[in-house]
Image (cartoon, rainbow, N blue to C red; front, side, top):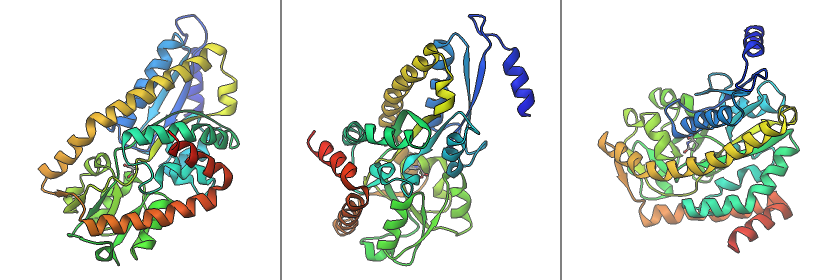
Length: 321
Ligand code: PCA
């Protein structure tokens, strides 16, 4: 299979007559998700900008590498480029979790400010891992999905909770829930089989996973906006000519803006779709919000302690904007 791809790639000629190169791009979310559609548009942009010399082929839904394996695959050169929810790797470097600190940045505006403050530090952390930062796009604000009404964090105790990173697992722990780490691609099945009965995520993932088939309530907590980040293997990037490098970075800047605009546009519609399919979509009660904010305060302090001077500088720069 590898050999065939190589032969096909080697025989394809670009508009300029140069031999075209093909890059596989593993992504973790469904083909119809806006992150994936944006990745496909990014690939088209690169193809156009390089006159066909660099063709990026998106593999959605964890089909080439599962979400949790994508970053390592790109670090080791098994794939030249990929997209990953970086906060799922906060155990490797706390800076990767900067976008998942509850109630630090809760709107698209603040998410953009947080990225402006954190981008250099995130890019430097990726660089240490043989990766080049290209672009990132936020998910809509994160809310709480359950199969019962809850009015305080105490009501969440004992519930089986799907986590997607260390921060969501920590929330589960603070609430006395039982965390289980599950990729979005396996979420529907986990809910259907009772492996998990609740989770925190966006309306986007709730709709992708048709969670109304298993769950009943969505509380629009707007706790944080995690990001998917696209990165390239440093050696693969280094092997590109200047035009190829410029195409990746310029198309990446376009994709960052287009992806965020799309997320903003789609956010309200996701919640409408949840409600249309029978879910109760509600604001959290004051007690629930306060309880979750208390977890946020604990986790902000924990993150700053873990992320040291770099983390403190990022938070200070964010708050100063
Ligand atoms: N969807 C992804 C991460 C954040 C989000 O909104 C997920 O649930 O896996």
